[in-house]
Image 1 (tube, one colour):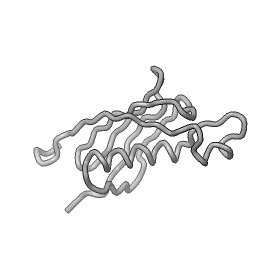
Image 2 (image 1 turned 180 degrees about the horizontal axis):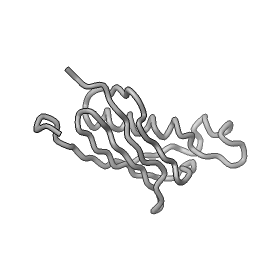
Image 3 (image 1 turned 90 degrees about the horizontal axis):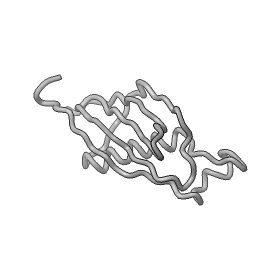
Image 4 (image 1 turned 45 degrees about the vertical axis):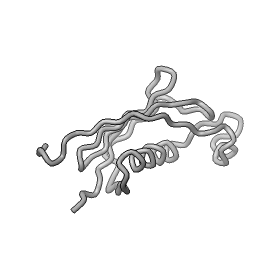
Length: 107
């Protein structure tokens, strides 16, 4: 890693209310936050933190070891080095997702 791209770290709260419109279809009677919505929350949070748009080129890795339930507060930890956004999201002591987005380099 070059000196131009030091690793920056950030933590933030994430929350999807239980009345979000996605839940009746995912899954009726046993709702969980869809993985794509969880990943969207990670990217939205990164953009707010960095104060600029983040442009994912690909999702290099993502593991979803535990479900995120409606209305459950979660915590995201982000690491950004200018090329990759590493993330993990936890709730109630369990990892909900961990992974790496490869980002379009600015320039």
